[in-house]
Image (cartoon, rainbow, N blue to C red; front, side):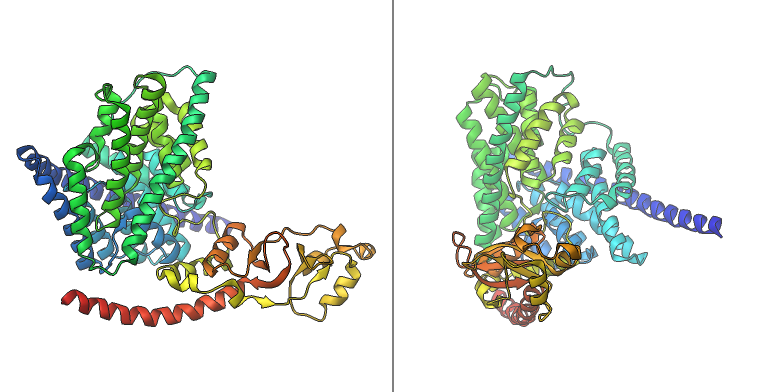
Length: 585
């Protein structure tokens, strides 16, 4: 019987690996088609601009308007953006389901956006397409929710591996991108399998050439080099935060505006066209910009002009992806990093230091995407391993120094969540689409007022006598002025040996409390609870006195969110009808 069970398990595993291999093959061929379609469209764009540079003004408008129209027709979505964002939204909030319409619509919209001059990366559509194909296969295989998550990431890894010809980057990116400070470890082997097969397909059809010039040789590590790597990491974290800030602010401004949605692609496209008229280096994928930097063509460029290009690339990318276009932010981060590395080396060394440029590329990606390992692997696979130690120092520094700044903050939790946290986070994500709904609710609206508290001077016996009359699990511990100094759970008290029940509670191991003010919003409370992994928050008058006013438990948050979500669903239905009527006018 044991042998039969073993064979059954092995057979199931082989079936899963076969499915992952099939995902890799299909995604590999689809990604090659995506790349060739983009190259064809980009060839038309460059030919027209070579004939008359002012064509770029109309091409970028056509790119954003065309991309947005494709999204609206095929997917029905009103907001454009990054394909990675859609992938993470599916992973965390949609049961890892991406419809065929979303996959096709997002991919075609990205090709049109980027092929006609929009500033974005092809990794966005390749991730979305890879995840979408894997999701479709998973649905037909009737996989369980956890297996669907693994297949989604496997497809994403395959897409990234094929578009960059970088299998290790695809694997690590798929493991890192779901969380800011955690890994989706369960997807490692399936993602490896899919990624390698997609890589073989891509190389077999497009050739093994790297997407950037390969830098040979090895760097002799010195204390001075490590110092510059650290400083570069700090600078990259600042630039990364600026990039994320610009991207998020433009998105919020567009979401809050009442202007007709089709006006934004026209305005955004015109703005990108004007930028591209004087700085064509920021348009499209931008591979040529990195080629020029690494090959020394920018050696005579003034630092002020390099800084200008950096800022314009940030603006062009943010406008493209937040005002109608779709694509990825991975490659724009790499290009901004390359420009930063060039600027740093020109200012500090008065020459182009390609190792610094490579390290800055990794550092910017790590800061903005929160993918530390993938950023280092990407530079090593696409440019060369000569800078790997310097890149490691710079990327690690920027990864941590940039804090929680990320392009995907609303769909990229800090760590893997438990079941309660997942429920809260899911409802919060639903509500966050209507910004005022979350902000309007204050902590004071949902807290339990004047909660039962334990005195720090009370003995364990006295505490047990007190709590037996109540049905709570968690109790705040306060001093004589009713200031919160910690909290204990009922299981903590019961775990103390009976011969120690004469001890005061202040002498036992109290837990550190999560404190919030009563005037903070529900959104702020939820983010703090998720970050800390706390199931209770203790409400105080202010952070100086810490005087206890109330307690909020996870169940209190869930009750409010469920009630608000029901109201929001009804409002959304009415709003959709109103917006449709408005667009018909």
